[in-house]
Image (cartoon, rainbow over all chains, first blue to last red; front, top):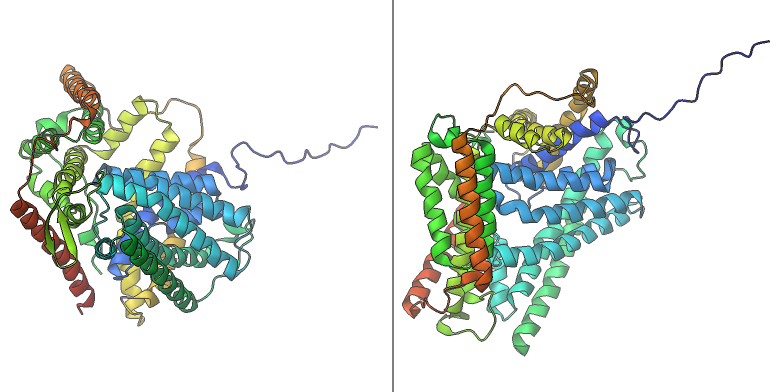
Length: 239
Length: 297
């Protein structure tokens, strides 16, 4: 008696990665996320928003594909920007990488995407980490300047006696909090609208209307503003 | 909605001597410029580098777009100088030269402010010259010759191709949303404009992925390129001269401890005051113009 041929268990193709997505899909998704990071900044300025929204592609890739793919998107975003408009944005790749790693590990490993408050907290952590990395770069490369309205805030903190690094950190944390929290929730809305084949393995909460998020962002920014002004005045008094 | 104003800086077609130089030779100059700019605090070297890059512009026929591209430095440059004068990024004690209200102006920051500005100007101008005179495909073909993984090369090349496509798409989607009554500005327009652009782009990627799969994207064979980039003797000369000059200057600067001329050059209090006033006025003007533009319509 000959045994019936048994179908071999499907072997995991070497062209599939840990997300069970074909490598060609990842290779094409990454440039899309990079281009969307760059275009996101243009959309924000077209909508006349006071935030940058230039890390949404990083957040989506880090959450959907994984933290290190998000980090690659971050590096390519600043590398691509360097090819378009010069190498001054290159050091900020580090900020993008840090944001990607925290968003990626936060949702995929630390389960910070399960509820809206947790996801909100994750975006606050991203904002603080990005500022910690960005502030020294801004001071060392640009002497504390960024070329946008936040510099007026930096000047105000300097005028009351805060030192340069402290002033840059204080003004940057305010813009970073608004930018990363709003950006994170926009990414959440986009992830919800993506094909299920891409998002099936991700444990993440459903998107929420942006109006509530904006109110919470305003509360956090005002709270942090009070703290940094208090610290700046204290620093000025003790100087 | 027109996004033309936000279009990135791209290649300006031409057949100048700068256009014909091998991309790798130009890349040597750009990388060398960045290394030298960040190795030295000598403003004579930094502004000579910027001037040299500026002199290449008429030869390449890109003077006007180069100056237009360099305009992005106005806000950051002006705020950089103003901030350095009120809070120098150098060790204390600082020398106060004047006071405007609560703002004390320090002479020490002027030199360092010009150093930081010179670094950015020099690096940016040389990079823009390279970008404006090099076809992106030639650059990626050259990267491939340097054994940069073709997957990475593909991702970078595809990014540069996608940016104008997405910008066009943003314009179409926002016009469509506005025709349905969406507000054209503010946070209420964020989700209706971001979500369709991102989701549409990512969904289309799945078709592209299948197309790549069917063309054997991951195969191990030798990859060829439609555009051929050849290295002539003159390209080698340009590359080697650039590498030798810039590396030598960087080494000299490092051995001389950044080669700063801060002690040799002093700025009069009047010069500090005028520099601060010009920088602060320019920065305030840019910010006010941006605010006025946001309230337009």
